[in-house]
Each structure stands twice: as C-alpha cells, then as structure tokens.
Image 1 (cartoon, one colour):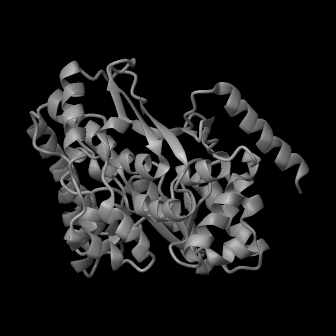
Image 2 (cartoon, rainbow, N blue to C red):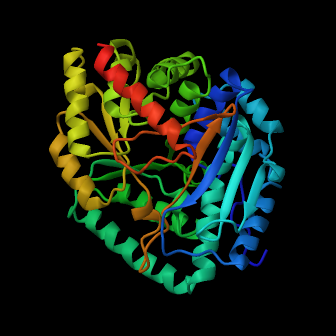
Image 3 (tube, one colour):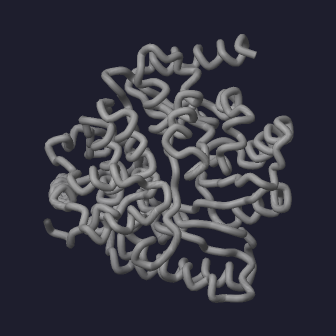
Length: 405
C-alpha cells in the first residue's frame, strides 16, 4: 500500500449492515448475492495506480477481525442477540470474493459474489476505500482537507447561531466521505453542538459504528434497499410487487417493535403503502425517505397514518436523500409539529470540499442467481444488469396497483 490503511476496524461500517446482518444470519443464511460497483460521474477516471491501491486496501481490510471489546459494544445494543455476536466472533471478510479490474468506462470495476451474509458487509468499507484512494491520489489532499475544514466550521456556525433549524439529525456519510480523518473531524465537531445551549438543532449520532463507539454517540441505522430487494425478489416463488410484505414480515419476526424504521422506496412508496397496513404502521416507529420529492412523500405518509387512525405525531419521518442544511431546514419547518422529524445527512457533512464529490454506489444486482432491481421514486437511481427484468418488475407493480385493491 502507498497510503496508510484506510479501514482499521470491522466496526467501521454503517449500523444497518449489522441490523440487516443479524436478520440475514437467522433467516436467510444460504442466500447468495452479487454486488456491482458503479461510478455515476461521467468525467471521473480511475488510474491503474489507483486501482492497485484499492486492491491493496481491500486486502488489508480482509485481514481484520472483530476484537472482544468491539463485540462487547455490539452486544450492548438492545436488539443484537448473542447468537449473532458469536457469529461475528468467527466472521472475516474474504478477498477471494472480490473481482477488481480496470474493465469499466471509469477505469474501475468491482464485483463481489458470495453469501449475502458476507457480501452485504463489503459494500460500505469498499466505497469508503474507493473514495479516499481517489481523492488522495487525484488531488492535493491537504488542500482538500483545508477546504473541508473551512466549510465544516461554517456549517457548525450556521447551526450554532440558528441560521438553519433542522431539529434532530445524524451523520450518514461513510460511503462517500473524503477520508476517515475528515469524517471523524466532522462527527467530533458536530458532537459539540449539543454543548451549545442556544442551538435549536441537535446532533444525535452517526451511522459509522466505529465512530459512534469512539465518541460515545448513538449508532444509527436499520435497513437498506438490499433488504427489500433480496427478501422480496430472491425467491422465485414470490411476486416481486409484494417485496415489501416479505421484508416487513421478516423484519418484525427478527426485531418485534425494536429497531423499526421502514424504508419506503425500494419498489415505489405507493406500492410500499399497500403492505404498510395498520399492524406494521403501528409496530414500526417511523419511515425513511430516500428518493422523490420529500414534501410530497411526507404529506403522503402523514395522510397514510391518519387514514389508519394513527397519530402522525407519534411517528418519525426520517429524511436521508441528498440533503444539505438549507433543504433540511425547509423540510423541518414544513412538518414540525405534525410528526417527529429527523435527518440523516451524508455527503454534505462528510465530503464537502472545493471539488465535486464522487457519486459512487455498490448495489445488489443478483440474489440466488436471479436478477433483482430497485424502482425508486426518482427515475435513474436503480441499478440492474437486465433491463428485461426491470420492465417485468415495473409491470408487476403496475398490475398490483391497478388490480390489487
């Protein structure tokens, strides 16, 4: 490696990887998935030197093991069970499940293939490695870090002086962070906001479990799109238009009323609401927005709760789609007093510099040798290798919406 080790702990990932991981371990241990990397920036090119460094960094990540201290921390989180923590004691990443080449328009191709238990865990560290390698090798990193610090100080002052009022928020930026150093700098800085009596905004935690442990913050995260896609589309006996039904049922089987924030847009929010009946709407403490117009989505969710005679003020609307403080302020002011409003803010906190951030993803593209896809509320956010399957999924959703009343 030419750079210092980027991932230094297996806790250095988003909490929802463990939340989903436990449910996968108990209910879907034999499921197998393929994950594919994509860079959406059309002007970005990874050099061969970058690709070699990414390989070496991922090899170093695969050498890590959980420490007993880390396992004890996870065991202290209310919804994690001893059986899963014992499994993690034995778990290790496997480099032979990665295929990394230069065979892509951007110069970097990454695929992982293996059990869902394993491959799910690779997504966040891999994206963090790709980001940090790119920004350290493409630019003068110290100059980028200085611009990051300046912008971070400005953001902190905005919240401290109540220029923006965003209520409760968390940091969600590991997958697209400038660097591990920058993310920790942001988390540490924002944690001091709570010492400021006059700030109307409250920083409650981070999705990065390693930083949450280190800085005594709340680790935040429940489920991602992969959960709905694989539980709903990874079994050929399932109609994929009912993916949310299978996902919600399996989640409640694992957690009951704990750890309950449902993601709504894996196959459109309108289709999700067909399965988010009074039982699930009561059991889940809230819902997360990740695509589409946030105001329209929030109004739709409030109307849904009211239709079911559930007080929306008892439920959390968590917004997490491409947010900055100005946008969060507008959303908060619109819904404040009508529901609990919270924000998960990622790239804007963890990678705001004088150069544009990368728009990179790793998505599940197959489960149990079958295509899987996401049909979000924003066109173009999905990723699937088989366009015929996407059209089939769209037809299934359309049929259900028109015929399953």
